[in-house]
Each structure stands twice: as structure tokens, then as C-alpha cells.
Length: 182
View 1 (cartoon, rainbow, N blue to C red):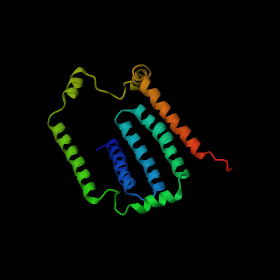
View 2: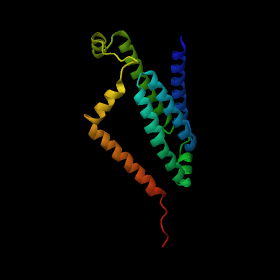
View 3: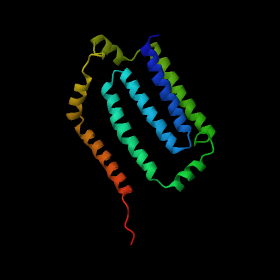
View 4: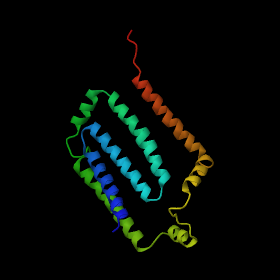
């Protein structure tokens, strides 16, 4: 195995380990910082998938925007509400044990089925793209194609997302505003 495989598996292990710790933590502040680690390791995995634009967008939007909003919401939240949330869960996960086991087993069975099914025969869209030579290489200009698609075909969803993010910022600013006492 070469160094790139080791780095890929390192990012994957960090992402999975941090995500498991994230859902099992009772302290919200520590969970937010573990979420920070998960988002950065997923961005590293995007780089290995030759999706450099998606990796940079992951860092800018999710780490730079959403996570900062979550940190502000945590800092401005009521301490008693957070204490009630922390005291309410007595298990490893918030779900009862039997529901967690059923959920985990169903996800594991889906992953095993998909890996066995894809391991024996490839889907038709992969075979047709391989035959036509439409496979991505590190020298392809995917950022230019993404920019053209976002500003032409997907302009309306792009604008809707930007309005939603602006509404979240306005809501955070409204929460921080001090009310005048009568």
C-alpha cells in the first residue's frame, strides 16, 4: 500500500471515529468540536474522490457557516435547557437499545448487500462511462463545469439555498439582540 492509501484510510478512520464519538457525547460543546473534525475529514475524503470543489465548498459552507451558526446557537442557548437535555439521556445513545440495534443492523445489511451486489457485476452506467471514456481524471476541469451548471441550470435552487442561509443569519442576529426592559 502506498502513502495515498494510508492517508485515505486515515481520513476515513478519523471521520468514522469522530462521528461515533459525536453521537455518543453528552456534552454539546464537545460534540460541536467533534463535528468540526468530522467535517474536515469528510472534506479530505472529497479530495481523494477528485472532487476538489466540493471539498472546498464543504469547508467554506459547512465548517465556515453552519458550524459557526451552531456554535453561536449553543453559546446563546439557555443553560437550564442544555442541562435538561444532558440529564434526559441515560443510555449510550438517546434511542432505546433495541431500536438502536435494529437501526444499525438494517444499515449494515444495506451496506453488505450493496457491496456484494456491486462487487459481482458493475452497474450499467459505470460500464457505459468506462467504454465511452467519460471517467474523471485528476486533470479534468470539473470546477468550470460545476460553475456553468450552477449559474445556468441550477440557478433557482442555488438562490433558494442562499436565501435560507441569509434567513438563518438574520435569526441568529435576532437572538443576540437585547430586548429593552419596560
